[in-house]
Image 1: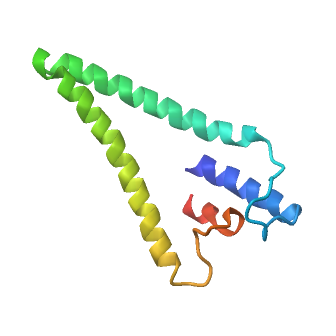
Image 2: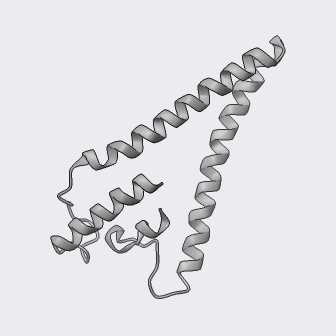
Length: 116
């Protein structure tokens, strides 16, 4: 999350520098490589989690229940996405009570750096 916050802060800085804050669909002149650290960390953590869970299921479960372990892993990943979505919904509900919303249709004014 910290790495994503740095990338979002950089993106907002470039938007301010090029006067793109009011335009909801601009092309922001920032390198795509700013997203690489976030995706490398996220992908590595997911891969290591899957490997460790699979090892646990195949070493500790009976032979007939191993597929149940793989299904449970899929459910865990989906629950993670569901919880993340609920956090965003709660943040939108709370921040919509104030003038400066965190999530808006205009990504440049959405204050995502506060979320991270």
